[in-house]
Image 1 (cartoon, rainbow, N blue to C red):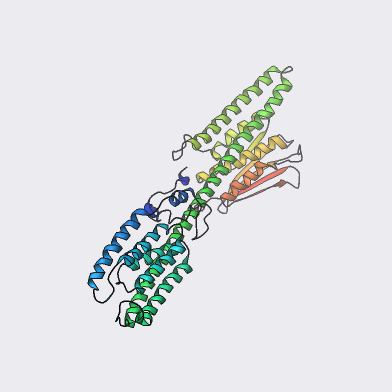
Image 2: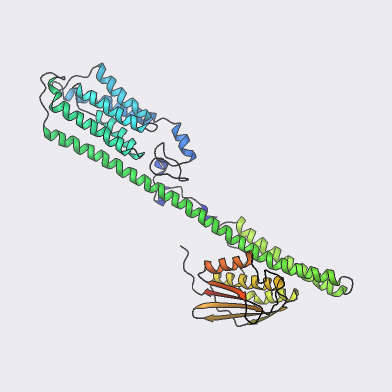
Length: 424
């Protein structure tokens, strides 16, 4: 059905397709548990992958950029040697595990960058490895660890640039200006802020997807219950008529064959109509999105109910006329009257019933009375039929009252609003 379709493009307001599932460690909306993870099958597939391409591109950029920075800072910082390039490769290589182990990667890249700067090597894109490692930690929910890693790097840089520079290469180095620390701190805050923004947006997308999944499931459950009510109302009424007429036919088969023939004819007609309505309900299930092949029944079919009830030996008197009703209200009203008459046939000793249809104070009032007496403890209906009537009325904002009358018999009173609020 249409309500069970799930949007698969960025048009519905979620993340783009390449970012839909978040980083590894996140799972699908089923059983979502916050920023640390969803639970779905796609995550296991993503866990099996390694971010080779992005890591390789970043490694090339860091190495080339560091060589360029070394030429620009020649004489001010130490030249790149094997140890410097090894630190750069280690820092970049750890990013391969940023999706699986974001916390160790955040601290590892920060430690590698601290050693690199402490050895006096030139400033450059080495900070990108720390930025990416901390970004991955934050968006997967390890916020404190990421903050601790960037704080450790900044504190280490302050110590090296203002106190430890005397004992560390390059020789003859002077203390850094404090204005430089403001710039570094600004970049750190910008990186953390961007990471937090991405984390919040991904959590919001996760909640939205989970809410959409729950809403789709709820609509499917409501539709299933509606179909169950439809089938119950159709089958209960028709089978009750068939049951009564089958009893009449068996009783009169030998003594009055002509009356028995009439009973069998009624059984045939009732079963044919029941099959037709069941087929209509099933066609609606099989063809989602298509219009129904036959209009839904309404109060204009009350004469048919009277004829069917007459076939079951029940005389029905209709009083009043129904106003023009919305399709949902019209169907609910018809089914309520149908179920009420079915209960009279099944549970009442009376062979007469009265149906009153009237409009009062912006509502449709349906009243079905019989004079009893009850033929069983469940007179008037106490099972799914009465519960189904109440569900239909409640879905439209109406009410159902059912119970014995003071003067004997049984009454079903339904009040349905003529204007139905839009479905949320």
